[in-house]
Length: 337
View (cartoon, rainbow, N blue to C red):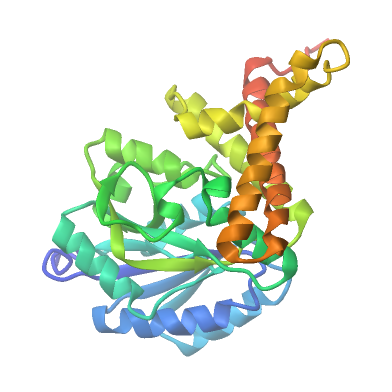
């Protein structure tokens, strides 16, 4: 009997949870997903990228307790490769891939809504909006900044979705057939793998639906060094995407790409003040955005969101140009003697 025959009649999701050092969240999240997939006969795969905080042990216990949970080692340590491996080993007989990020919170009806929207829209992928939430002082600032135009540049999926077809969004559900048809995630991507896959999906004629019926809560980094490192990697991933597909950036991306060059140009300010003009204009925009956010939040504390945005923008731009330059300069290979 064809294992995919029942898939055409009713949805059956394969939920993949890539994780690394998520001992604090993995049990609660997995238990929630077990309940969510039960009505659909779905299955959950926890893909661990080498956790050292006890995540593997907790996941192994969950897999031993629930027949609908499996644990898979991700030796490549990249989410893109880990999800591909989960689909390769467990994907047969499932209609949809649902990607769940361990460092986020999900509504109980999340999977049910995704499946309904996939059916209603006819889309090959259903993406969601994401709202950042924070607890500590830096995390709260980071969350507020990411939720504002100051931090997200007006990106549609960085707020609750509006119910429309889009080019890209935060990954949630992908039809298994479409995922496999385009080759899954590019395992060479450590960041921006979702946008890279969305580009290939749309190029192949698949449609992506941004749902307005659900969204997720995302818990961002809680210290400045982690924020800088994360956005540096985001910039590298976006540049890698542009280079691979010979794409041009949107205006909001081009503005941030320009940050590192204009900051570098400002070093010539002592020669002539005009060299510092672009950097001063960027800084003024950052400060104005922080003031606007502080007014909206009703607290002077959020004036410091300007500092978070400054770190985001500069780190992203440095990562972007670092990747571009690394591809432009040929690597030196050892010459046999």
